[in-house]
Length: 165
Image (tube, rainbow, N blue to C red; front, side, top):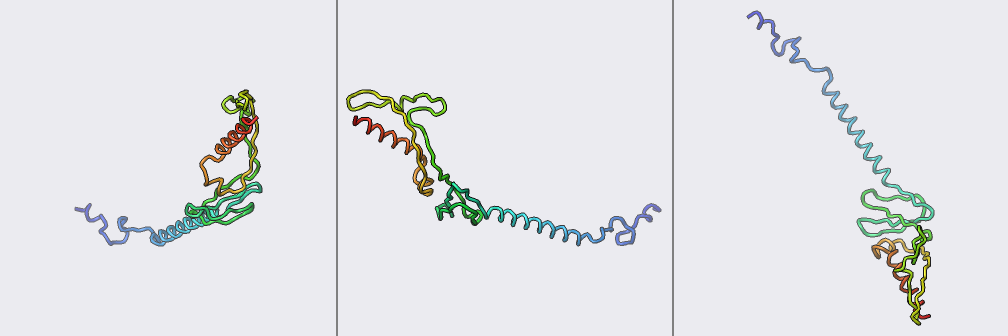
């Protein structure tokens, strides 16, 4: 029985079960506020970094708002609404591709280069096509593969011209 008399009862001073750290509630509130401040700061930083974009000198950009093209922007620093607008950059320099030969190996591609004239002679024609994008919206949204269409049209025109001779 003497053992039970030495155990402190709840609510008595010196009872380790009843002891709470000093300022525990205040510490939790301060920690919660600090965590909230860090989260708000991170969200503001992400929104700030996603709000601006840069267009280089040889580029134009199509700004897309909710999936439809809204504007074409020229070189420089620009603002956009994060997560609502997206930017698709288009290179406006002169582009090119070969027809009738492989540029790396410099070997002829017979399917592209072999043509027939009006007097039924075969000629091997290879040439180089250069083009420049003038309308970035049409380039991005008018067809899936604009370079393939240009290549096919170029082959058709040269075959028509060679066929006349």
